[in-house]
Length: 443
Ligand SMILES: Cc1ncc(COP(=O)(O)O)c(C=O)c1O
Image 1: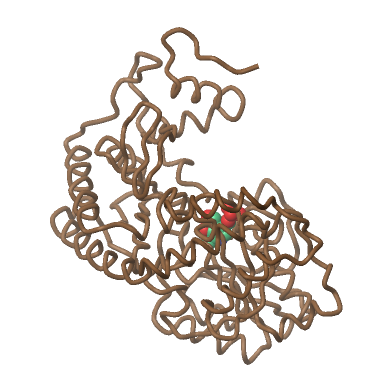
Image 2: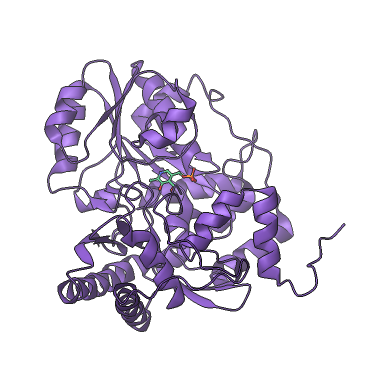
């Protein structure tokens, strides 16, 4: 039976009530407190409207999942075309769509990464990357980064750099060691002859938009080379042009052994991930082609959409646009930081993967709230609520960057003047002051 709204209850309110009742009430409370109780309706390019008609510039983009914008017409057309002829396909058989996408990934990935295993989401891609490193090296130890984020599946969670995500589920897998991000000495000390892999995000996303320091990836490459460990770069947030290069590791020129991608590969329409690796590592899979399987990983429909997505990034020069608009945005954020030193502690980022570090933890959620009032959807990061991640689609233009900067300025002014959350429509009493627990969390 179809659910219907009660008299006078809007579709948005009904969705929030049902979500609270049947999914999780605390999530709804946290979202309300941070002004993020948006229920997505229409989505188009860089914009999203909630079911009540309010329009937002999407600067969260599901943590970097909408590089080509939302419902890009060419990607939507590719999906229609695919649906007319395909379904998700039989995972056991070889498929033209999987083959074509694997070939394309080999073409655009850093040199040497020419083999692909598909998955459905980022965590699965990371799980396979670490399985492959262990299987191929026959070693156990995995070195990951404090504040790193790789998803919530088995291996990925064991590599997570935040205790709160791991603690309720311990004991997790053995052999995982964490070191501070950016500290070469700590990696040198942690890596030994039993180390299968060092895994990191070239720019930590959930960790607070922390860019690898100069020379860091080069040093990790050297440590891995001298110990025989695999260097795994998790480009799930940074990939497909986000940082102004196809993949963020390219800024350093370092060639990884394994790279994971997901999110924007799906063109905002489908769920797909990939683990891309060297032929040398593929040797492990030659006698074991069925050692890792995924029914929906790289479905034919998803591969067709992903190919169209990559084509859009190429033909619309979105990597170059990310570099150009990113420079404009970072310039504007620096001006804002100079004008409002009481709010902004630091501007971070590369390309359109940018972050604003506020003076204290409470400002992340408070700014999310204020920005929502000024037509911008932006969320503080999961592992550092004092940092607001600003990651619009790579299709943004100068007018949209200007709108974003004006909204940030107006939101900061409102926050400083004490303009607080408005009285709640539902409960008739003021909303709680936004708390820093939760909304930025995860994906
Ligand atoms: C760097 C990174 N790795 C892995 C993941 C996990 O991806 P998924 O949520 O698709 O499992 C994320 C998600 O935000 C991510 O940002």
